[in-house]
Length: 83
Image (cartoon, rainbow, N blue to C red; front, side):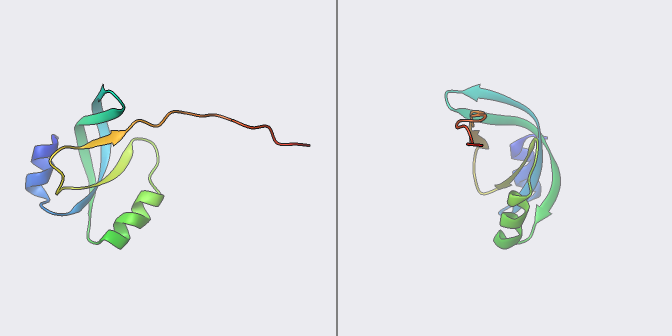
C-alpha cells in the first residue's frame, strides 16, 4: 500500500507498518510501499509497540504528509571491553 492509502483508511491514528520498499535521499529513507500490521489506539500503546519493533517494522502517525526516517548507521563494536 502507499502512504496516501493508509492515511485515508486510518486518519489521525498511530499505525504499525511493515516496510516493503523505500528509496534514499540524503540522510533519509522515504518509505514507498508498506503493509499495515495494526492500528494503535493510543500514544502510550504506540510507545510500547515502538520499543518492541524489530526488523522492517515501524510505528508512525498518519497526520504526517510523508513517511520518512533518518538512516541509522551500523556502528558495530566501537570500544573494547577490558578482561
